[in-house]
Image (cartoon, rainbow, N blue to C red; front, top):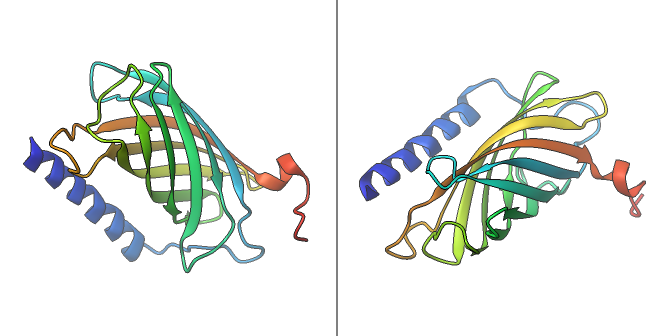
Amino acid sequence: MFIQQTLLHWCAVFLISALAFTLPVKTSLAGPPEPDFLNVALGGYDVHDDRTAVEARLEYRSDLELSIFRPFTGFMATNDRSMYGYGGVLVDLFFGRRFVMQPSLAIGAYAKGSGKDLGHWIQFRTQLEMAWRFDDQSRLGLSLSHMSNAHLSSNNQGTEAVMLNYAVPFDRIAGKSIWE
């Protein structure tokens, strides 16, 4: 089981890396930079197992650019009281003007509630989101994520989530930036 999970994880990392570095994509569009976003997501947690739960997420995706990376932070909760607070980095890869692929990596603290025991309170999450970008820069997308403790404990079951995401530019919610 360990060998299968490790092999699957590294195959996914290789495929995402190959896509990111070989396809003719842009990490930014001509014109103004991408804004910061408030992302709201709803979907299925632990979809690869028989203990599927409903998951809800709220994320802040910063407009700060660190080379090609952008930081983000978030919180997720499930209907079986599992919770996860996390932070990490993401990359926006544009295919034309409308289609955005967004791989991300995060680390955070997990509490199982009455949900799945992931073996450790420290969890790592990798995710791939594919989204449609509207004229107002908001995005509607679908994401697939994997969360595990990276073998910090002998119990490393991991879990997958499939989410419907809506990311709205933060200034549409909070008004114009105080920094402008």
